Image (cartoon, rainbow, N blue to C red; front, side):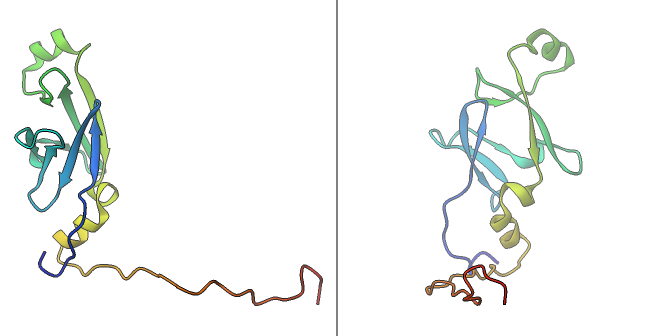
Amino acid sequence: MWENWLARKLPEVDIAGVKFYLDLRLNECREVKDFSNRFNLDDLYDHGRGYIFCFDPKTRKLFEGDKQEYDSRKHELKVNRWPSLQKLDPLGLRALMGLPQKKEKLSLLPKKRNRHSKGKRL
């Protein structure tokens, strides 16, 4: 499935000032500066049109506490809303679904004007 796709730079997402690579092939986000800091996309709450999750900027990880801990720390935690994977990484999702890459419309020649009237009515 992924063999037919060219190598590409993974999209970066910003979560409370921390940059993560979004890797749909491995179904995870990895911190750009520290690859050992990662989380699985299955840990995010999918509400149908996107994702909602709580991030702890101190630990630079997803918040994993209970409601009582959330209530006591909610001023320092960040609630994030993401759009669907289609909007976050459309190329990665096409590859994940086994679809071919879209052909880009690249024209090396400049477009020619069909109309040569210079704004005058014909």
